[in-house]
Length: 474
Image (cartoon, rainbow, N blue to C red; front, side):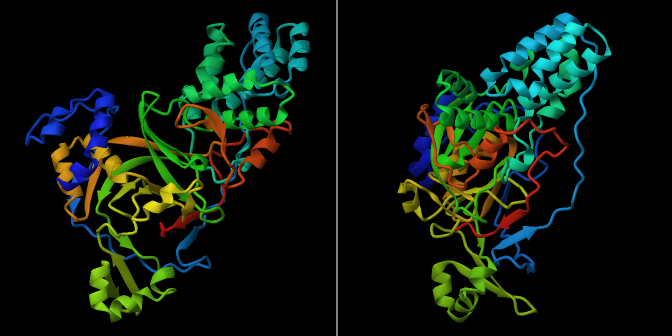
C-alpha cells in the first residue's frame, strides 16, 4: 500500500473530478465494485491483463553508422500521387454560397485567394454548365482538404508522424455530395473545423489581432493549421503533451483533469517526434536494457561483470553472449533510469512516457534533456490512474503491484489515445493563450508555406523523414 499512500490522493482527485465512485478506493475493500469506466467501448485486448516477472530479452546487435543508442530505420520509397477532386453538378445558388464561403474563409486562418474567387465569380456569371461544375468542384475540394487536413504541405511538417484519419472518415466526395444535396455549402466549415476549444480560442485571437500585427497573426495562423493536422475530434478521454510547453494533460470531455510536467528530447537527432498513438499498457517497476553506447562505449558491461557486488547494489545484471557481446539490464527500483513506471504506446520510434529518478529536471524552465522519450512528473500517479480506468483494476491491486518492486505489465482493455504535439502559440495549462519557444525550429517551414501559393495535395499522410529509433531514455 506504500505507493497508494504516496500517490493515492492524486488518483482519488482524478476519480472525484470524473464523478466516479471513490469509496472503494478509499476503503481498499477487497471485491469492492470497480468504478464505471468513462472510456469509449473498445474490443478487449487479447493480451493478459497482468504479466508479472517478464523481463524483456536482450536485443539483437544492430549494425548502424549512427551512435550505438540511435538506430536509423530505412523506409521504402513510396510514390506519392496528386489528389484529384470529384466533379459534381453545381447550381448557381450553391456556387454563390461557395463564393461567399471562400471570401470569408480568412476567419479560419486560410487564404481566400487560394480558392480562385475571381475565376469562380466569372464562371458563375457565365451560367451553369460543365465549366462551372469543374471549377466549383475543384476549389471546393481544395477548401475541404485544407479545412480537414491542413494547408501546410507535408514536406514542411518537420518530424510529423501523426496520421490524421479524417480523410478516411469524411472523404471529400462524401462531404461535397452532402453539402450540395442539402444546399449547405457554408455548413462545411462547421463539419470540418477541429472541435477542440483550444482551436476556437486561437480562431478568436486571430480575428481579434490587428492586420498590422503580421508576425502574431502568422504565428496564430500556423498553429491553427497544426490543429487541422490532427484528428478533428481527439476523443472523449486522451493524453496530450505540447512539447514546447513541457506539459502533459489528461483530458476528459475537453476538460483538463490533471497536468504533469515533462522532459522532452534534446534538439537535433534526439528531438521528440510528433505522434498520435495509443497507450497499450502500463509497466510498473520496469527494467531497462542499457544501450550499447553505455555498455560498451562507457565500459559499463565490463564493470558489471568484474564487480558483482557493486552491480547487485546498483541493480545491474549482465549476460555475455556466445559472440562476446555483453548485455546489461537494470533491474526494477527507484534508481532505474525509467523510474517506477513506463507507459507503453507502441510506435516505430520507440517513444514512450516514463518516470525518472532525476526529479531535479522538472524544476527547470526549459526541459529538453531526453533522447526523445517523455519523462513525466508524477508518472506513478498517472500510471495508477490509467490502470484503474483503462484496465478496470481495483485500486488496492494497482497499489500492491506498484509497490511490489516486481516487473508487472498491465494491459489496457480500454485504450487511451496519446498525442505528442508541437504548438508554439496555444492555450497553456492555465487556460491562457501564449507563445512558446520554438525549441526545435519547426515554425519556419510552416510560416514560409503560408507566404507561398497553395500546393496541390498528394497521397502522403506523414513525414517521409527517416525514423530515428532511440533506446536510451536518459
